[in-house]
Image (cartoon, rainbow, N blue to C red):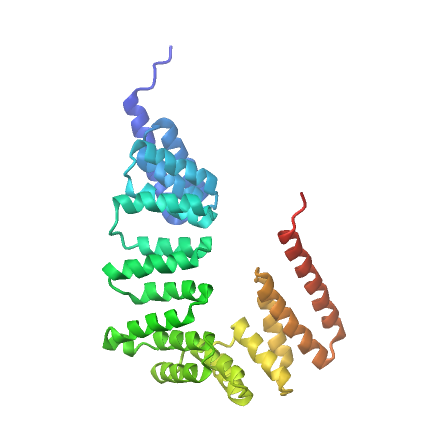
Length: 336
């Protein structure tokens, strides 16, 4: 007759499975990690850390529904367990369940109001949910009692841009510059300030900020790209082309820079190595998923192949444009 498995044996087995799960989790093998954590919670249903880590494994495999279930199980065992509380916030953020995300954030804030991750999570919520104005108001109140940090202000710029509040963004960046000498020597801040002046339509002021940014760091392709875009707005195409060339020298395989450079060079009817640029753009487009980004690349490729007289490539790109349009339409208007 078989003897029943002792509780202590189950505890030992659960611990062994948990440790194996942790090893696979560290390796990034989330399937195997999930298997061993699931064994652990089957053997010990109130194994809090196993439930939490099982949720982490599911989360990394983008199985958000299963991850939510696991973190909820962990919180049933301990409603104040910090890891499960913040992990379920990340689940809702990536799952784009904005109402659940906000409720989870409130619970976490109630228990851990000083956690450094909180403002960034709130920022993700306000941007993801489209509550831009409410987000700006939230952070105005937040900065009244908390110090201004560069990373958080840069994150806030997304809110200001999406809300169309460019002047407020400019003021916040100016405040950041005035905080200390280190910030005044930070090219990234000056570059962002230039970008917001550009958004506001003040291109001459944007030019001053970009020039200051380049004085501090002339090796940043983003600053050169923004400078080039600004010169296009000022209708100084020669200087724009020169700025794009500087950006290309620093980032020769960046598809956005190549696309913008080619588009401008085509408009100016300048002779370039079009085949080389087209090859890079085609390869880059294969890894793009955003409809608008792909369309911009295809549009430039079409112009290049028409210019060099490659009719086969023209037909190929036209087919890709139709396919891209069809895929986008099916996402917008899915069949019922």
